[in-house]
Image 1 (tube, rainbow, N blue to C red):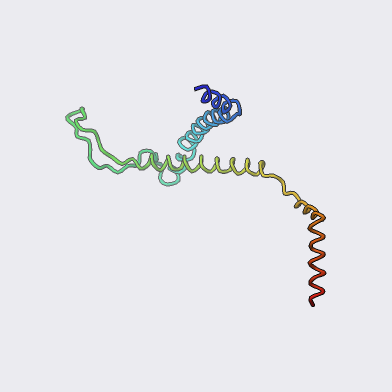
Image 2 (cartoon, rainbow, N blue to C red):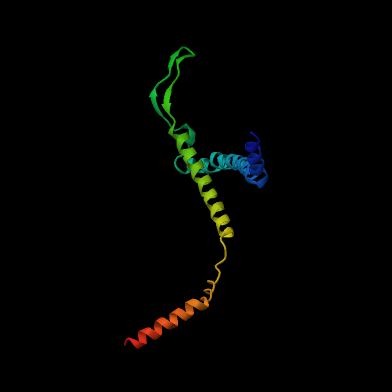
Length: 141
């Protein structure tokens, strides 16, 4: 148990834990911002361009509601594909933004290209053996 606790402390102190927590909080807030942008700005504009209707109202009714006077006996069964389209737009915007952030971070983290290091000088015994080899090749010609 003590080993597990020390591993957790090391994990939390390293920053991974805090980085992850900050990422979750910022991601949640960012998701709400994007959802509002899609719901309140983008989709109304798209709806106005294609006929002036609310995208969230798009649906295919599989079974109409059964009414008895003003009372709903059986509720309507429908595929709300307008909501689905709206959520796809949310996802694509969030995915694009995350892609751009990760791309920027990777660009900052990428080590600068360094000139290749000069090869280490050969040890004296290797140089001597190569000279002997070369002399033997010349004698055998």
